[in-house]
Amino acid sequence: MVSPDKKTPDADAPDETQRSNWEGVPRPPEVEFRNVSFAYDERRILDEVNFAVRRGEILIILSTSGGGKSTILKLILGLLKPDAGQILIEGEDVTDFDENRMQPIRDRIGMVFQDNALFDSLSVYDNVAFRPHELAVPEEAVASEVRQLLQFVDLEDDSDTLPEKLSGGMRKRVALARALIGDPKLILFDEPTVGLDPPTSATICELMIKLRDLEQVASIVVTHEMDIVKYLSTAYLTLTERGEIDIHDTEAGHALGNTRIMMVRNGREIFCGTEDELIAFDDPHVHEFIAGTELLPDPKIQSG
Ligand SMILES: Nc1ncnc2c1ncn2[C@@H]1O[C@H](COP(=O)(O)OP(=O)(O)O)[C@@H](O)[C@H]1O
Ligand SMILES: [Mg+2]
Image (cartoon, rainbow, N blue to C red; front, side, top):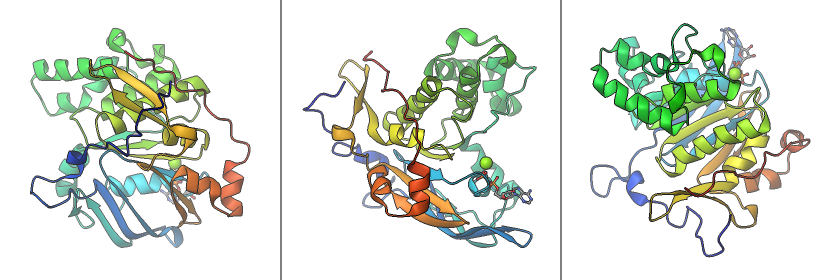
């Protein structure tokens, strides 16, 4: 799987994704939190949280259940507003945007909900096509995009199926295809592998890695499961000259620089860094997370 002469993606990262349309001006992060605090009534949920995610990166947000992970995603989508601090999307401060100004921003963000939020009475096709149908996009354009997305998540033969006929992993892939409609450059995953068995979790992780390495999207993956952290941090994809996908493990399992982990506890960031740095981080709460972790099977995408 690993070819010794293979450079890690960091070494040959395509710089153009970090470049803006203006020469010499770097592209701003897809999303950035600056000292964001949020409370439900008197209860402080987030306390001066800072992070930034750029294209071609994954930020994994780890905390125990109730730690404020879904709250962070709702703040990004503008469904909640912070009590203090700023939220920037593609460099634009959207903190005080009202519903009218927020909707077009939200339309450019892909969201994979924890429970998938699929419509049971709609086929896979109509679930994926939901937003463009709402916007009355011509069917021809919708059909070609949906076909491509179903191919991406390997469900092209299930277009007419109802969600209830699908397995948990397949439903998650429908939810991902729906999140990808309109070609968003920022994708939010709320506990994407919860309730899935390890091989199915690995498939979902591979799709996230594909988006990071081949589509250069920015992803935020919130989870309380340590087992996907190692996988996302040490597997990467490249294209061969013939356009086939190769999956690699990093040398000696070293963590990729483009996949960082932020750990939140009691609303505060207690760690931010790579998986290598997380393992080496000397903190009892971090150790608690790492202990008892069941690792996912080896990467399984084959060439071609
Ligand atoms: N609408 C709400 N009103 C009051 N408290 C809430 C509400 N939604 C969530 N909470 C509380 O906020 C905390 C963080 O919730 P959440 O962001 O959903 O955590 P996570 O996604 O990490 O499990 C939890 O303690 C939860 O009970
Ligand atoms: Mg949650």
